[in-house]
Image (cartoon, rainbow over all chains, first blue to last red):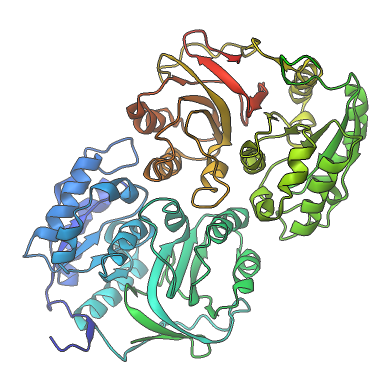
Length: 303
Length: 303
């Protein structure tokens, strides 16, 4: 593999390890999954916890089962990547038990977003890259647009990502009053704002100094976005951030005034309106890679 | 004042400083406030930020105005206590600017709950007591039951709280499967779970070792209660807690299974079903005082 690859291409017909480290997949969507995987040209291994039994109603299986699945998926040499079926809540409960050595040895990417932000954060500390990208049960199986997003993601996975490559959204979201001009360079970290903030004060909070911080969220009203960003500020976690990439904040009133109030005083470049998060289309983002963010050009470049 | 008083009685007709350190009070309730205060036998000084102009829609006034009101209320020697009109979100934004010396000198109690948890937490670090209790705009002015709660609170404020006194709810909530037997002693801290957790990782998180931790919340689904309690656990913040007092968790599915999953393994006494929080009746709780919690007796005793 040429050294210019920052995320190497997956095989033309990749084999993915499917896990449910957070919420329980809806059985009727799980039933439709094999046909969709076949349509997309994917092989897959469904780890056992994806089929329950659910724990506390909101967890796909108990912590021991979900953790064992995570380890098994990363250890299995026949799997090219590990893909979460959906988010919800539950990844952070697994963090103390994660075998970091195992994760570091199998350098395969983790794919997912939302609650997966907690696992991406742990992997960031190990220097491991992954994809913030739509997931089968929550997105691909939702409707035809979700399936289009899956096709787009799989093209990207098969191409890999090379140094010098430019990432621009399929649909330009247009000028955003929230953006602040500039060019910033750093490792891309973050994901779901509430999940990232739920790591503050724990040993699993990533070091944000010198990073490009990506943030998205869903169904959080502006006063809650204020609470989350204020916590990051009071903790000093934003002091050394090189630049902000603002994704989708959906299913709530616009948080733009709050984002401006909390982030503009930090004086860093900010690119708003990036279509990643709980939205569709949802552009895949390479977490853990060093990128250049060009606000005027509305794009990211792989360093 | 005899030294047995842990929270000294207020005058028969106390004068209260009214502040809005978080959300904006609804104007139609503010208009009805003077008549209600008179009915209750209270004098009051309404600090200017209570009447806006609102900031970012969800703050009663900008940070500088709300902070000035807080300082003015605590500095004014004619005021016997400082009472927040309502919660919402905003107290944590004020924490870096709070004049701790001023707050420590004027030892008058702070009264309020919900978002006020952030200010109670700061005061806890200064050894200052206060009341977790219903507030005028959000509770007293809501309906007749809210007004009854106000009368109950004012009786308590006029009586003060002495060493040896027992606190038991007006209506016994009955046996709760969530409770865990035992007797625990410690300083009562806490309040709203989400607001307390929003202090994790910041210099304003209270030290919970050796405390009785009171927790309540509103409209947080069980998976979010899981996220909040898991964050406290991963941060090690619950390791030295002497006992748990669980208040009302309203407007969402019961979090009892999650509370048991996250708190029972800690092996500390736990008294559940205490009627304080976003509920009515709402029993006032003395924050910052050393108490004994007797789970079998379903009561608290002032040490």
